[in-house]
Length: 90
Image (cartoon, rainbow, N blue to C red):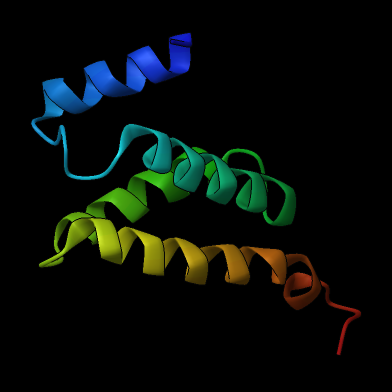
């Protein structure tokens, strides 16, 4: 087991969300989103976005499904962010 896997499982247990979503899926979801945000928006936006995703998903009836849905929306938003923020574009 890698350090990341071990840490993720430990953190899930500590937060009382063990079993809510498979630890490997949570890792992939967050790292993929963080990569998109870091490259499309700004590096510091990646952990902030992950935190906001967790807050929003945690309010849903099905947090795991909502995290998947919202991560997709945020990644799409981040991928087009540089173009939408370019004053010379459009």
